Length: 261
Image 1 (cartoon, rainbow, N blue to C red):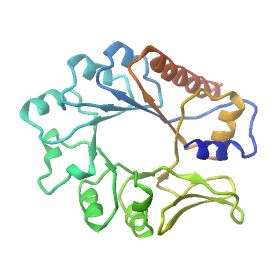
Image 2 (cartoon, rainbow, N blue to C red):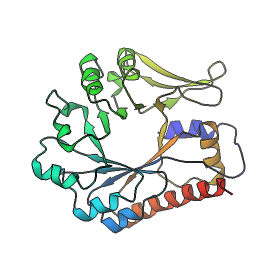
Image 3 (cartoon, rainbow, N blue to C red):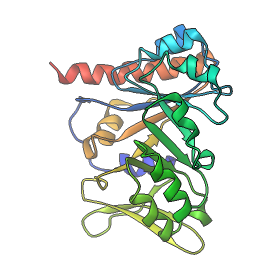
Image 4 (cartoon, rainbow, N blue to C red):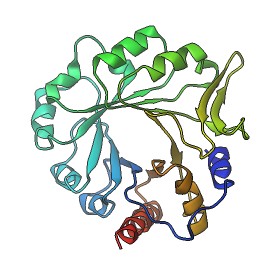
């Protein structure tokens, strides 16, 4: 991710100040964070990914989820009736599932018709693609190890439904008028071509994990090439981590407010 971010910021800067019509800031948060603190992270473009251990968040946490425009709740089998009753209180919440838990039983349907985000860790083959496609996902993320990132796997991946995120990717140097996000393995090299402005193909998401606040010029350089770039923060339960996440939300909210003036 550091290589990716450095390559993006090396491109020519755009306007002097950051203005955005919208943004997507993906916040990876554990269910142990209390409800009031969780609400403080909500913004017009914050996407909450809430990890759980029990499939059953607290009542106060479920109430706090209403503050976010988009929420994905991590669930895993087995789902019991108590889980279904609890999560019925949050009908807008999408399901965040691991591809290895998907099977023909359709266990996640116990929670009713909801959007599904699937995370794939490991090789991508015809069988994995079939199981993922069967749930008609809204979003799919694939995180292969280097030896698992094959061109055949990429071919299966890009045909899946929904928005697709693959990582980790790094930026190659200029390639005949454009560039490429690439992965390499001992046996293959996969390429996602981008044009001279750094734009990626439709349906493939460019998401960058950030670990520090960026200055104005860096943010402008990041978003001017590809306004649909998504940011991601892994939020810990400690005050420092939570304060850092809030600072990002406030900064991006200010950029959206500024674009309306």
